[in-house]
Image (tube, rainbow, N blue to C red; front, side):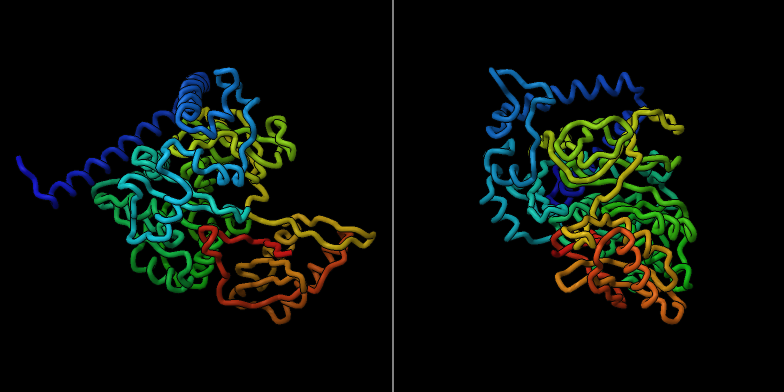
Length: 465
């Protein structure tokens, strides 16, 4: 039977969608492995991945081998974002993927889903370091990326159904360089209706779109989900999702409470572009985030990259991910503070869980100390003071040379004079820590600015000093 080009395209897309569903179901089965089987799976994948990286990447060959043998994991040097990008021409497993080729491709991108050399999706992340990082994914790796989303839905009982079709709303970054956007536009399914909303849209516009769409599942940034929950509470939104998933930013307790109060308890997701998206996610117990261990190995370390005891919050984590062998990620340092446990979860899964995820995207503020010198103020001091304050809806703290500005989207029915009282409370909190507070200004805004360079992640506490 001869098919025309249009029919061939439809047939190819159908095969791709079936392959994603098959990968998602395989992922669900791997979630049910006991600890011994999971360790065996990891060891097998890990060994094959290191051998592949050493054979295909000159940069990783130098890092991974000694006397012709692969080094033990603990002897492999820690990899930083800066070092990886400085050696980009030799770091990938395809010698065509040079910095020049990637720069040219990014500069000339057009359309929703542009491919480099007809096969690579190129994403970019700046994390919180400001160092631009390219992550190319081949077709097989990308299938594993987008399979994580239906896998999570299936695991939590919200998988695709024929009638009525589930309705999925996703709030994503804009443009094909960002993972949330690219995953949304390449993971469309005829058996699940979807709506993509741009994170830069106004909250009122998002609420109107969601009201028309009436989603069963909502996926988005915690700060925006909390803002939309405020819209629902104020009567400007009326949706009833059975599942809400929050990722890309730290899910603060006040944000979780806001979403839970009007809809359901949100499922926290920890995702990184380097790990191919979802790295860990909560189950129905909401007692930590289950690591996606079938593709990743995590080491929690202190400030000097030494391992910390289980259950202890480290200064950073070292990620090894074999999900995407095109750009080998091996002992890659991510400055996120996590604690991990291997204790079994009541849900029955044997995977390790992140039980503490703090300081993920916020900056420590350094101020003059009363006793002389400088003092570091953890972002939690600002967040604990501001969260729940009468008058505060959403907020962001920015430290600049001329002082501290707290941008606030006011809550409905804000009491008179709350902003001046909040400024005094912050000043007192900083004094109690031994700091000499700079000027503190409360700035009332209609929305919070999101930087396009970091995938529109909102850094709740940010220092520009």
